[in-house]
Length: 426
Image 1: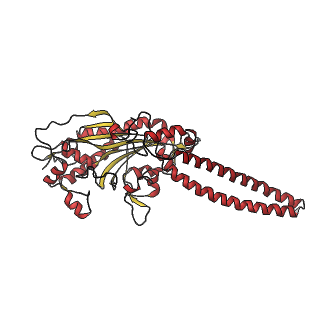
Image 2 (image 1 turned 30 degrees about the horizontal axis):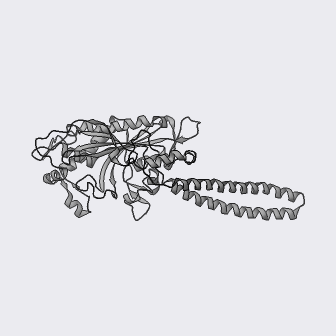
Image 3 (image 1 turned 60 degrees about the horizontal axis):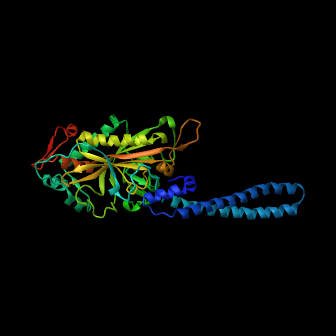
């Protein structure tokens, strides 16, 4: 959520941001409503001042024996009291409308984000590794997995529906190995504290991280209680770990990592990448979340992205890192890097991690603050998160980049201890 004062004092900057994001929003209407709110509160304060002053006058008039005047003033004050009560109710209702509108404004955008309407304007920053030279025609993971009997799409669809899959034997074991490797890497080498969060969250938490109200159609909602949702990412419960709290500045930064299953309707995919494991309704992920001081968030963003990249490097997977354009950056992010892994079977790069700096956008929505000094006024901290890494898409990359001519899959060396020495999936 953006600061109201910033909106009122920088309308041109907000218009420019909305334009660069290609986000349709009636800012003039909101500004008029904010002005009306100030007017309503001013009128209410005048009434309250008059009532308070009149209350003192009533006592004085009674002491002076001016009973009729005192009773008349008391009746007037009673009427003012009714006006104050009605005014407070009106302001409260108006505030709810304003909050709803405020939640519909995206975050500010980094000034160095490439300007563009969509992913075609994203800019490649760096690459790591090389595309593996194969002396045979590569197959995609869908074909390889079915031929090896380790991915069962048909039975997943039978049991649940489209875009649900059984991982079997070698794929299941590789999936578990990936989870353990990633958690060990980020806790032991990168200084993160591991959490096992709830896999259900309430609507307040989803609003805090900006999935609600904008992306409700992409969430799986329970019917009872109807304000509970399946987690779309560990970002939601972990970011809300400190919701409504004031942290000590001396305790920052705070770094957490968490494994969770994730559930998404993929409402906006429109048939893209629906074959195989790329866009599943259920997948698993290890997420990194940081809480930092504002002056440290840009450096933390680079650090977090590097940590996600390090996981791919240790796995020996070729990838490229891109900075997202203004039109492709997510609603809540100030700046975002996507790490895209090469899939030789699909002959394409696909996003395997998004690393975002939200600045104070989520902290305002979730009311997460800190005191720079013990006696200082609390202020909003900055939040960041990134996938490090999603198990399904990383599994896809391993299957396709490590495929061999006979259709088997070599296991990355770093995972072999977790696979109890298994080096090839046949």
